[in-house]
Amino acid sequence: MTVLAFVIGVLVLVVGLAVSIALHEIGHLAPAKAFGVRVGQYMIGFGPTLWSRRFGETEYGFKALPLGGYISMAGMYPPSSEATSKPTRRARMFDTLIQDARAVNDETLADAGEGRAFYQLPVYKRVIIMLGGPVMNLVLAVVLFAIMFSGIGIQTATTTVATVNECVLPAGTDRTTCEAGDEASPAAAGGILPGDEIVSVDGTAVATFAEASAIIQRSPGEQVDVVVRRDGAEQTLQVTPVLAEREVQGEDGDITVAEVGFVGMTAQTAYVPAPIWEGPQAAFEQVGQVVAIMGQLPVRVYETAVDTFTGAGRDPNGPLSVVGAGRLAGEVAATDQPIANRISGMLALLGSLNIALFVFNLIPLLPLDGGHVVVALWDGLKRAWAKLFRRRAPRPVDATKLVPVTYVVVIALILMGGTLILADIVNPVQLFG
Image (cartoon, rainbow, N blue to C red):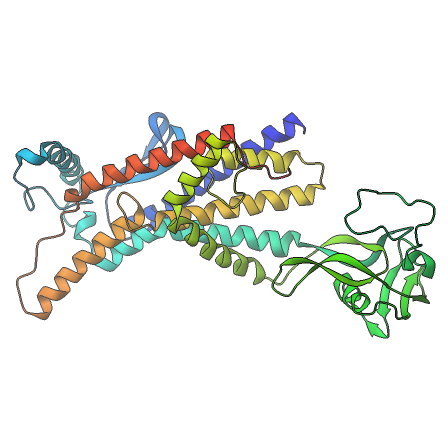
């Protein structure tokens, strides 16, 4: 593993993550400004500010920890004068948190100007602003998968023969070379050579190696004509597939061992551009898979912790931290595969990361975007209910009351994130064994 290539892979992941976060926040920023909301800050990262510059009324900058980002909109909540709560002895700590949140919110309202607070917008505009960030991640993932599938292409076995086995080795053997007494492979006996381009098998024209293999696999013990193109001229060769145990892929994608016809040749691979819709389709299919993982996230994190402390192998389909994603990026970049393979792997990793950001931010809990969407919808539902029964319009929903829940969610996320970081350091997912 080349150290330099590994470091480059990690840096590509870090830069890709920063770009993803930046675009996520732009997804919030653009509609917020379009709807007239005063945006005080647009920041990438958390912690101390490394660099910032003000353009108009908005300060743009970078902070020390590039693990997220935010925009500061005026009036995320209604002013405290419109919704106050009386402190109670049983919940003074929570009351303090709520009052602190209201104080910060009131500071943003002071500079907002008439009608420029987020909470004053119609419900649909608030939903558009909060969904803008996750949707931007989904769009970026679709673009990355489209580039991977249609720009670079899918690695596909072509009809050109790469190698021809000298003999038929038994399934499951550790031997890689032929010995005296081994049966010659049907491909070698039939005269097939590396570099031959398969044109047809048993009278059927084939466009892929998979089509040729399917005909051969269902013809054990039968002599079949194989037309190949060699040095620009077509030749007809005869091969008789032998019955052998080999791994075959079913229509559902599962790999099983079955007795099929076998001739003993492999195909050259090449990147074949897929139709433009296959990349987006793969992205949306992965959204469903990530939703299933997110629905079981606490359980998955617990299982990861158990695997880490017991020394068991990690589930390659389990959750990862940023550290784990960076490690995988380094492994992809440091492999000895062709550059196209590595670029494709990095695109897949960044695309998957953006899909995870899309799904994660839609979780309907504050402080995530999905939580703000739920608050806006609840506010709209209350207003619609009052209008339906001709009642006085209710006060805006005071989401500061949910600040204690927000703190609990944040603490839970920190604990799960810390667990995954520890697991990715001590018991990392091994991409290449």
